[in-house]
Image (cartoon, rainbow, N blue to C red; front, side, top):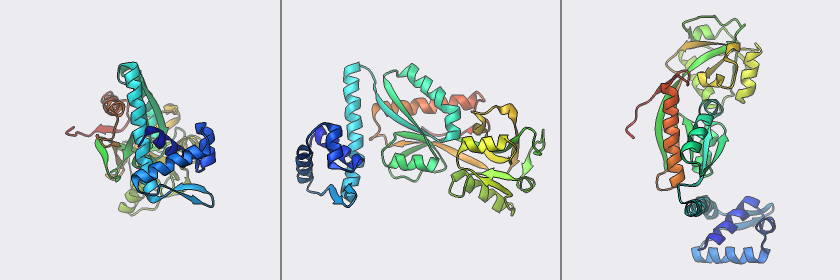
Length: 310
C-alpha cells in the first residue's frame, strides 16, 4: 500500500467522480483506475462502487476513507517536522459559536507563541455537528457540551457553564435582580434555538421540571442573529454568559436564573491518544491550559472549573 494510492482514493471519494479527481490530481483516469484496482486487490475488498450519480464508497470504503484521511494527515505532519526540525503539522479544532467568542483568539495566540510551525484550522459549528466531525476524523479536537457519545473519543471535563436570562438593556427584564425563577421567566417572551439544539433541550427540561410553558417569541439557531434580535428588544433569551463575548455588553441586561437544570458541561473531546498526531496532542494541552486560565481570570462569565484527574 502506497501513500499515493491513499491520496488517489481520498480525492476520488471527495470528488465523487474518477474524471474530476484525475483533473485535480493531474493524472490520467486510467492511472487512477489502475491504482485503485491494485489497492482493492491488496485489501481483498471492494472500496468504490458506481451509482447513477457518480462514484461512491462502499461501506468498507467509507471506513477506509476515514482512516486514510488520518494517515495522510500524519504523513504530511511527519514531512513538515522533518523539514522544520521542530514540532509542526496541522490541527483542526472545533468550537461552538458562543465558545469561540471567548476562547478562539486566546487559543490561537497561545499556539502561535508556543508552536509557530503548527498550522491551525478553526471550525465553528454546533456541538452536535462538531462531534460528528470528530467521529468522522474531519477535525482533531473540539469543546463539546454534555457527554460525547462517539466511540474512541478522548474526553476531559473542562467547566460547568451557568445560563442566564439576557435581554436588551431597555427591556422589561428586571434590572439589578438577584435572579429569576423559571416561573418568573415564563412571563417574558423568549427567543431561543429550535428543538434539536442542545441548549433548547436544557431549556425545555428546566421549564418542564418547573411545570411551566415557554412564552415563545421566536426560534433562531444562529447565535449572531439571535443576539441581534434580543438586542433590538424583540424578546429575552437564555444563554451562557459567553454569548455576549462578541456583543456590546452594555446594550444588554443579564440576570441569573435560579434553576439547577440550566447549566451545561463543557468537555474537551479529541481523537484517542493513539490517533492524535504530536501536533494535535500539543494543541490539546494548550487549549486546556488557555481555557482554564480564562476561567480563573474571570474572563468566562458564569463558568466554573471542573476538576479532573488528567
